[in-house]
Length: 212
Ligand SMILES: Cc1cc2nc3c(=O)[nH]c(=O)nc-3n(C[C@H](O)[C@H](O)[C@H](O)COP(=O)(O)O)c2cc1C
Image (tube, rainbow, N blue to C red; front, side, top):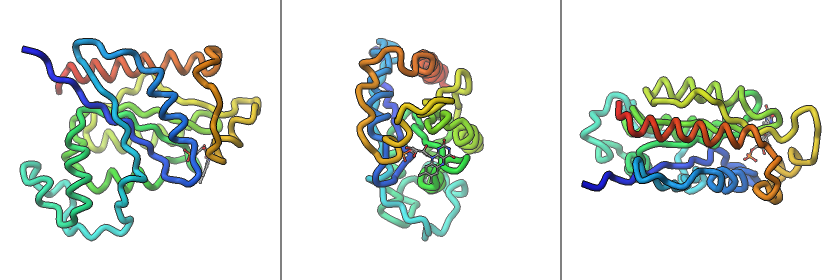
């Protein structure tokens, strides 16, 4: 019997306008190895900008209190039901997350907190970015994902730094949402982090095979 194809969501955790997230998402996507036959996978972008989830939720019940079998119907708002069904359709996630003021963006926390069971037990990888790689935001997000009982890849860590002791103009471009240039074309650029990304992604695939 053919094994199923795993659907991996690549979540853009930035909702700023402008933003660098789409440029980095296509860079990360391009670096992922071809899908093996087992576990086979597809990667689909989840852009939080497409999901207008109000900061002031009117869902009356804390998501952890809702029986998993009652979802998504048990949510009162149509947007929450759609968000629930969408996240439930994925088998694993890559959170592509910038660092904002030593943490992660509020938009991803809000999007996470609308749900619970839809995340629980699924493999997750946080790929951070920022001036020095966004590690502080990544560590905080990892803690949140563990709280959701997600199975998080923690080794190796992956963080793309726009400046690391030197400033080559990347930070300003990222802040302005400008095209970051041909990142893929220069193989020397972020060489170690490219290797770390592939290793971490393979760990994510291993977690998918090892259904907890
Ligand atoms: C509100 C805010 C806070 C930021 N704080 C940090 C920070 O703590 N450390 C850092 O290295 N970069 C910081 N930056 C710079 C971001 O890493 C950079 O702007 C990046 O492009 C943000 O991702 P985005 O463009 O996809 O939103 C901050 C940017 C914003 C908008």
